[in-house]
Image (cartoon, rainbow, N blue to C red; front, side, top):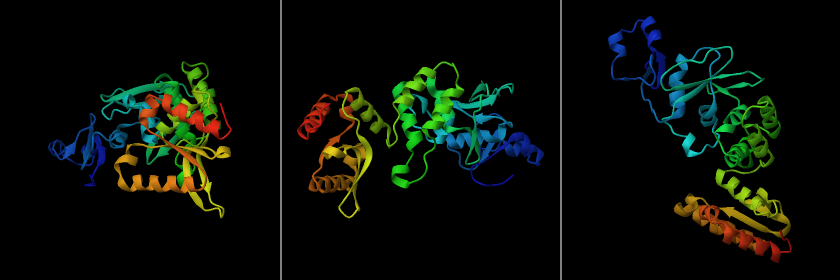
Length: 304
């Protein structure tokens, strides 16, 4: 067999290729699943490494689904579903039978038009259908966080197309029929917006909406008189030159980011913008933030 680091193969394939049982029992080989060996470095806490280790044991028609598919696709998940030690989740379309293997949770799924994607060589349920599968595991807020990411991705920064679209989310909901969780999906989709670049930004957006404040523009680009970018702010009320910026911990701990925040605020202030900085503490205790924002919008002529 190949000496490529991290190369996964089945015990049976190695024996057929002439490797001895004794050699296959050597400690150089990791044994992440029954009948599987990994030659070289193997990180059992990395979900993609575990998925690649399982791949040689997977039969045609089997694919990664549910939380495993979400993690592989990069969909933001709550910590309780992002445990690297959790069983990998595989799906098959009926009437195929789901595999029984330690370390794997299997699902037999009725095919209603779902599509699979090839993700770096791994068969994975498509992004929108993966989101729909999570309807019974996630709260409505968590489904909105995931949906915001699916229809936005990194596009506001990189220009790369997002993983999915609102139309595809609607199609995935329709494919669920009357299954449990459909109402949550519909409610989440109605609250989904393009533009949020992090779970915390989505939480803040929902907080503002629940407080009946005007809906802000998301990741709004502010330009100077010559069209050059001054800043892209997380939340903006362009007609009133009011901006909200969410600051994660790295804004506090990384000097360069902290300095950039100061310069951004100075540039925005120089152009007549008022900026409110928010943190995770405001999501837990939002009263003061909401008072500040209401007063600022009122002073600029826009009230809730």
